[in-house]
Image 1 (cartoon, rainbow, N blue to C red):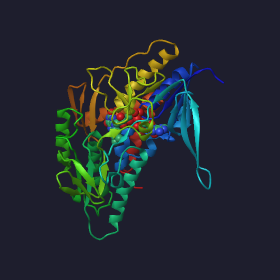
Image 2 (cartoon, protein in one colour):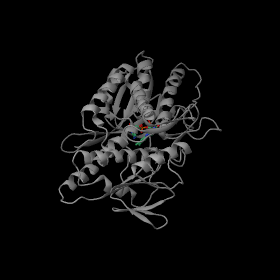
Image 3 (tube, helix red, strand yellow):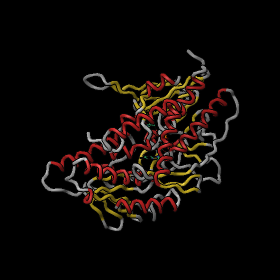
Image 4 (spheres, rainbow, N blue to C red):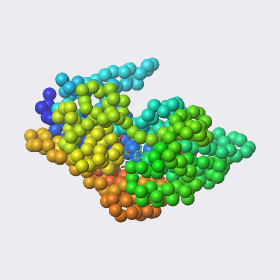
Length: 428
Ligand SMILES: Cc1cc2nc3c(=O)[nH]c(=O)nc-3n(C[C@H](O)[C@H](O)[C@H](O)COP(=O)(O)OP(=O)(O)OC[C@H]3O[C@@H](n4cnc5c(N)ncnc54)[C@H](O)[C@@H]3O)c2cc1C
């Protein structure tokens, strides 16, 4: 058995896959450590694309990365399984694996040894136990959920084609953070494209898209300026914005508010807040915050175990006392992944652990295919096509981090051709 230091990363998302790639290409390739990545899925898709997949304006198959194939090129091992537990006494994690043998799938638990464990399992939507949300709302936490929404939307249009008369469609998005706003703008684009392609029994004029927010303005985590520019653009799209509206209940046809009023909504998406995945909620012996994120020091080591790190959406990280807790953003996960490469090198050389510093490069909100608004370095306002190009370049940087610049360049070219030649919306 190898004496190499075993680094196990759980979660191959925006942060975890960048980390596995960079550690594989350095410590893995030079045989200084054994790098293992665990994920519950076979393929990676960058989470900030999910609203485009849901609206059908992006083909997910073109954007997926298969973990096994990727691992074989980047000197790490991939293990498919769902992380369910940590045995800190034996330094092992427990994974639930499913073998699809006929006639019944077999569930089996396996154990993986670690010297250093890095948890990057992301986050899921927080419905705050609001009545009816689980049963009647869509969520955008995974590729599968985005696909389900896309199929439901498409089938509403296909079904409407069988009728003589046109019909209306009411969509409600609960939560006016970046996810909710970006989805609303994408759905505005989708409704025009369906009509253009002849699916005309749902007239765009009869499609209402409402974005609902409990706070007194949209994009509460971003600056006032970005919120104002976005509001203006949403108004131009005819998207209804309901701020200071706290959702009390949802059923099959309506969204009900705390003040007793309600709006009609056939399709509903819950995008109001996050919490750590259920596996972290169940984990015992760790310090967590009120949404079950693991509390970490500025070294990204958990407060409870120096051999266990956490980063990205699932970590509660406040690098210094005068900073706020870092938000659930791809930018944070990506910077922490790069930081952990250096931290892991220091660790296996027995050096002291460095401290993570977050450098906020700004925020961009995509408002459909050729528009975005944002603020760079907290000061410079960008809008329109320039902002959209910068927004797209964030994804290109992620692709470069996991595939290298040459490969990412080819993917950009392929994407350009596909977008130019293919339909503007997924119709299957
Ligand atoms: C629609 C949408 C739009 C967004 N837009 C932006 C944006 O414009 N800019 C921005 O900065 N951020 C954006 N975000 C937020 C961003 O996607 C997250 O902050 C980022 O993905 C966090 O990265 P992560 O690595 O922590 O987690 P994730 O990227 O969510 O990855 C988590 C990984 O862990 C795996 N996993 C989970 N549980 C287990 C388990 N038990 N066992 C094994 N594997 C597991 C998952 O399969 C997944 O691969 C958006 C999010 C959404 C939903």
